[in-house]
Length: 389
Length: 233
Image 1 (cartoon, rainbow over the protein chains, first blue to last red):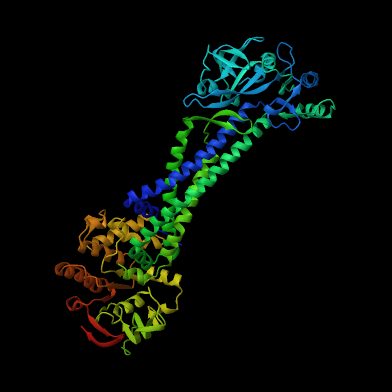
Image 2: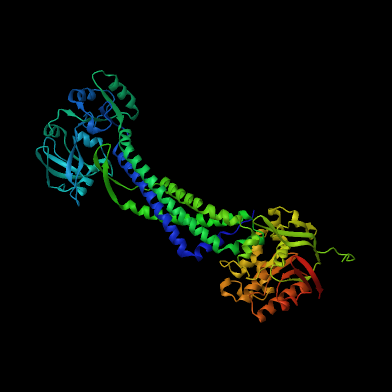
């Protein structure tokens, strides 16, 4: 079957360019919302997944789900340290970090509203277990002191968390001696101090989690089995990557579902807009349709020409929307992760898959909005079209 | 006609056409017989509602008869399916309309080349043929102009070039001078006459203007769906 050239489709959009651009902007807005939400969801996931290391294992109380409601007693931590298959660092120390994790309230910069911040008690080995965490200003806290270091997102997002400033919590004053850059991982949203000091200050006698480094990446099953087979321990072990991916799942899924639902509702407006534009185009070009058909172009050629216009319109909207959304990659935002109850800073992340999904969404709007007008154009009778001239 | 050794290009027998309005069928053409020989220039005349445009549409294959046969070049087009009819029109009929019906977004040359998109010609061949035909209608220098940059007479000449470009058997023209002033109309009619005389084309033209009809070799009057008289020129 012979069809009409692309130039014909493009020029018809060009001659009514104001309408074209306005209609495309309507679609662009929807694509923008759709893409931004997926980018947000992906950003949360990427941040938390980057938090985990491939060969790290996190041990929590069985069924704890999050660090904040997990507890590992001192004697249990002792048993874990004796398990075989744990890596040693260059100084020959077993790479295990016993960590209390507590939430405190700090006022946010800007609006001063309090929000939860994760405080992690750790150790030098805890630092070695997270090589993505680097000191960007100041220095690391010294063991046995009330010194803390702040993740870059905490330093930027909360009041009083600057280098050299003092924070008061757990009945003590804590001096911020360093700012760490955790490479856009969840640790950017934490405060770190000495583990034993934190236990004392918070009057706890159990750690929250124990993090260890596997000597061999494939050794996880052995460690897991050893832990779960030991009747003295009621603990579970997870690869750190898996654990953090789970931490992101609820929030990322919630945002994705809510956002997709919103985008779909908005899209009804954009689709109706496209439909009105295309119906107007069909009405304005009735004689032209009759002429094309008289010259021998088939109904399908007319259908495809109008559908092509609608799809091109949608593609334009998709590109504009994605361009807007990709600009969001420069924006840092934070929100409370309702799985950990703590503030998490992250970035919008645009992946090729999100770009593809957004374009597919735009084109779907184009098809839905363009098909009925195009169908009607194709169904018109030639003689009636020509009489309408 | 029966003694003519050459069969007519158009042979219409028992042609009827009615339109359904509500529950009633309103007859437009009634049991009409008509022949048109190759190389004829026929003017269809008649008052509004006489059925002349309907007859033209039926001959051009853009409408279907209620009864009867329309043989054109030996093919009964009443029997063709919609798709076959589209291909038949593309190959055999050139259209000239009252309001030119050029596509506003295409240049004069692209408008002329439009019917060739339905052929297997390459884009170079299409452009070349469009140029040749534009030269024929005296618009070589306007090839790249858009329709809205051309006068009415020029637009109609582009439309005639479009009707000629696929070298059809038959050209149908519906009030081709209806939107033009007297002088320009005469030029267009002169051009149509040349197509008949110099290129041997067959033209069926609907008009209500006796002066326009005078350019045709044969006048056919329709009244209330029947042929009332014929005047051979």
